[in-house]
Image 1 (cartoon, rainbow, N blue to C red):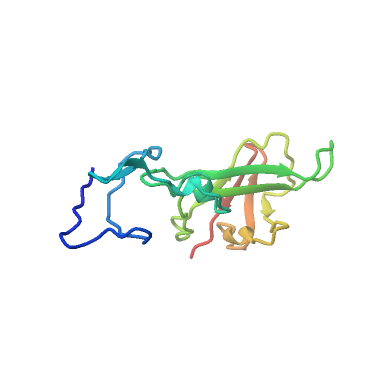
Image 2: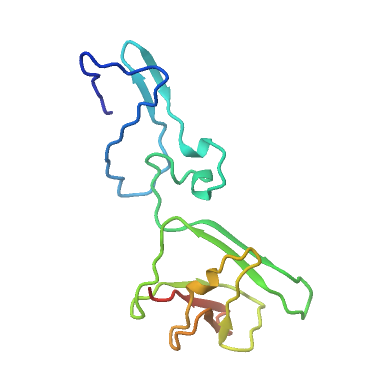
Length: 173
């Protein structure tokens, strides 16, 4: 626990946003957000503090509680959704992936590139080993994050028909 003393002659004023901060080191392993409480001895009983996820927000990091105090996560996905445009036998279908990571992932250098792999696309048939990655209808051009690892061509991934894997290499910054 952290105890702070209100200095003699000072007032923790009612109706005023008394805002202050302090630095902590997060734990070495992932954990859910603890229930943090606050109280003032002899004046206010200990009560549970509200985390950002308890409010309505369009920010997925807030919605899923990743901004909650002392919630610590490893690198991973907050959101991972895949959909297709056409479910019919033998027809072309566009697969759309929606991914939101918990931490920033940088496209480092060609030698140490970050690679996103989509596994187990069993049944998928792609005639070429190079796959053009398109933009989505919402206008966000995440496809521009990826470059062919050999040619450097933008918005191109590599397909392996034998393993049914699509490999997308993030462009170097």
